[in-house]
Image (cartoon, rainbow, N blue to C red; front, side, top):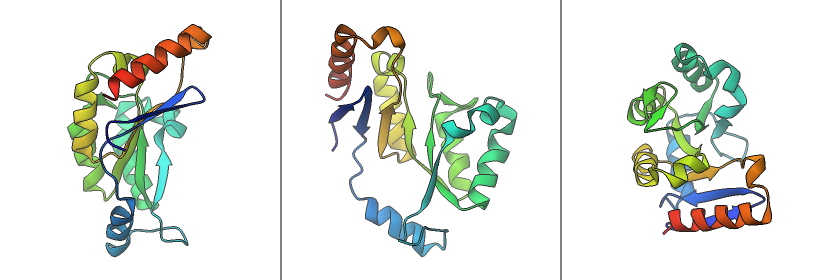
Length: 159
């Protein structure tokens, strides 16, 4: 899935080059992490906690609590200029790993895709992310021409 993009219902998902989810699942299971009945690790989309996480002073405590509750896979949001939640991407991901979790995917705005996409991809790969997601489109982009432009930009970014 490396170097491919998929646009579906106004969102896009980019593969970051990791292709074997089973090895991650096995490693997590081998370390004693909590899993679902089928053996899959438990994950959470951090956007569901956006009201708490908008306060950067609560991010580390929230991530630690999630890991303590058994959430070992996280999907981030809000990446901007190499930063997540008031930290560099590396600082954030190092902290996540220190509490026994990992970032497996993240939300990236169209501004990131049209901007310093190479840096965002490098940060995602360094974090071990499997997917980069365009989760939302502005109302003004939800036209035939807007969708064509988004598709063009996403396909260019996936090259």
